[in-house]
Structure formats: structure tokens, C-alpha cells
Image (cartoon, rainbow, N blue to C red; front, side, top):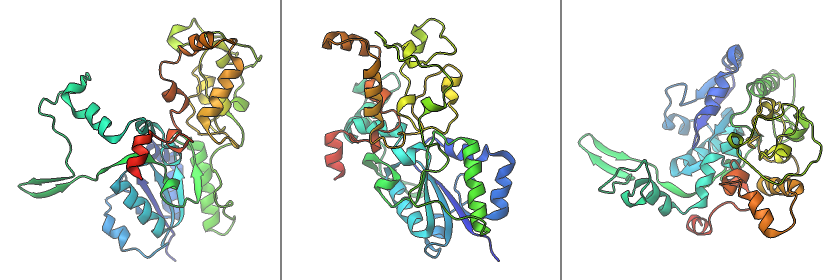
Amino acid sequence: MSKPKFAMYWAASCGGCEIAVLNIDEKVLDLDANFDVAFWPAAMDAKYKDVEAMADESILVTLFNGSIRTDENEHLARLLRKKSKILVAFGSCANEGCIPGLANLSPREQIFERVYDENAATPSTENPVGVRPQTVSQVPEGTLTLPPLQAVVRTLDQVVEVDYHVPGCPPESHQIAAILDVLIKVVKGEAELPPKGAVLGAGNSTVCDECARKRDVKVIDKLSRIQELPPLATDLCLLEQGLLCAGPATRSGCNSRCPNVGAPCIGCYGAAPGVLDQGARLMAAIASVVDEKEPDAIDRVLDGLPDPAGSFYRFSLAHSLLRANRDALAEQE
């Protein structure tokens, strides 16, 4: 009997999720032993036409990492949804938009002006004639095309139906290995799939509950960046020492890796269970420890956050209640 088919696709993301899969070390051999890798552009030669020719639902499981930023991303999301029995939103970009989602703070034209226009006066811009990417270009060898940039970044489940969610930027290797073990058992008839819509490879609480640091419910009068503070206590809550830590609003499952080494949680595992908007929940957590009552005094505390939107919604803006700039959303619609 032929092995069930596996696929993985890399949309608008950094590629870290692809590397994370390879970081499961020798367990990647279990993937090869139990699945026929039908489509994985980052690891093998693959053509879209080959996927288009497959029968619907002929791929057992597809790990889709990356957000939807271009027409090509959307086309592959719809194609792989059609060809896959199980479609998994894999990693923060697919689930929440992640860092690419912060582009939703600006309309598309402002992004192009910032990146390509010489008068934008950015240190990295040297483009005196204002060249911009073209969706179609004629060259001696023929016609070159680039997929158009869409007005906003969207998450996978904002475009197609998703069966399961695996959070993380990237997902932790031990979590990926555990998911692979479950899939192999399902293929062998030794286990059943979790309920549709389940979050896999993560915990059911917050990073704070995994963190060994002590919390004394203290209040703070200032938020600072880590380089502005004296050496931190190794056993006390980072938020209570004046660092913005996203642990109270972030789903567990990473074993509190960042706070364990003295770095604040930045929220990459997404909203904790039951939290509708991760950024809003984090704001509430900050408000609970700010020892000020007057608006001006509160503003002085928050001055320690040079980028509030990027701090509260670093990973989750595209999937939050805010979603995007109003003009960008209007253009998308």
C-alpha cells in the first residue's frame, strides 16, 4: 500500500518554521518512513501544476506556514485546502499574522513609498529614479511576473477553513515531534485525531504558569527596555522588575524559554486560552501593576514603550480585533 501524502508550504514568513521541522533531528526519518512527501518547495523540487493535477483530498496533511500577503499565497492556500484532508495552520504567521502582520498598520501605498521612494529618507533607501516592483516585466527571455501584494496581511483561517492550529515562532521542536507521533499513530490506526479546531503542540494555560520566577503582585512606576536596567534578579517576575513581559497574555507550551534566561516573553505562542485579543489582555496586565492614577503619570510610565503597537501586537495584530489600518481594510474589501 502507498503511504499517505504529506505537504508543507511556506507563504509570507521568514522560513523559521521550515527549519524547526528539520530540528526534530532523527525523528524527521519517521516522517519519511510513514509519509510520501508530495509537496514541500523548501526541501524538494515541486511544481504547482503537479499539485493542481492531484485528486481532491489526496494529501492527508499539509502544514501551512506563513501569512497571506500576496495573490500567490492566497492561491496556494485555496489549492492546498482543496487537495488536503487536514490543513494545519503551522506557526505564528499562519495563525496570527506575526511580524508581517505589523504592516497592517499602514496602507499599501504608504509601505511602497517608505520602501522604494527616495524622498522617504530612510537609511536603507537608495532609489533615485523611484523604481518599484512590477507585477509584469518583459525581458529578452520572456515575461517575468511577480504576485501582487494584497492590501492587508491575513491569517490562514481568514482565507480558508483550517482544521488544526500549531502556534509558535517557530513551534518548539519537542512539540512538533509530539504532533508527528500522533499523526503516525493515526495513520497506523492506533489513535484518533483531536477534535477539529484544536490547538496542537501547546499548553492550555499561560507562560506565567510555566515560569518559575516569583510573582509578588508588586506595582511598578516605570517600564524600561532591558538595556536600561541594572542587572535583573534571576528569581523575580520580569514584569514586576519593569520589563514588558507578555507572559500573562500568552499561551503556554514553550516551557517559558525566554523568561528562564532573563529575557521577557514576547508573545509568540499567541493568545492564551479564552483570550479574545492578546494585545488587549496584555494592556490589562500592565494596567494592573502600574502604580499611578493620574493620566499624566500613567503616560510617563508608558513612555518606556517606544513602540506600543509593536509591543502589544507584535505577533497578533492581523488576527486581533484591530486587524489593520482602516484605509488598508477598505482597500482589501
